[in-house]
Image 1: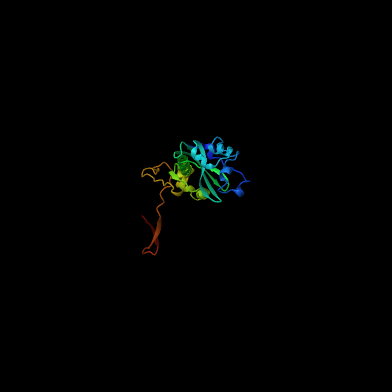
Image 2: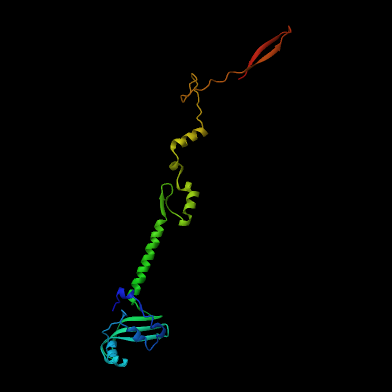
Length: 229
């Protein structure tokens, strides 16, 4: 019999009984009216009203509670079962009393379902965490960010790695800087002295000459100019 989820989430205790709880009175403690795990239509309640010994349970059919394991004074395990005959008993549920608090033991199916749900939850959380570190920028494409504690530090130090020059500077500014660094030189044509690119250029520098002095036979000095190519 599969335990209901409401019972698996329940616990019950009676503080007045905890100091005196032992192997002899643990079933009486479990059969308290305020205990939600106790079925008052069971055979234990019938022999209790008739003041019979617990050995009469073996001769009856129906639902019964039996103490299965004892570890005084901490742990007690009680089985709820349906008795069809003296030798044929079908377990329905198990309850354990730990430190005076009663809990219902989950069955194997409930344990497996709980573990699978916990695993799926952790996997989904891991994927969500991984997706939160995934980023896309035009300069770098898809990439992974670091942990949260280092986000701001890396963002300030590596801003130029996330974006290219063309993304955070205008093209005209880049061109103007290139022109300043590498000015265009105008080349004049051979005819008319007009520049090839349309810009005005200065004329060719004048031919420099220096006087060449020579003394003749009359003692006078003749001055001639020597053309320097």
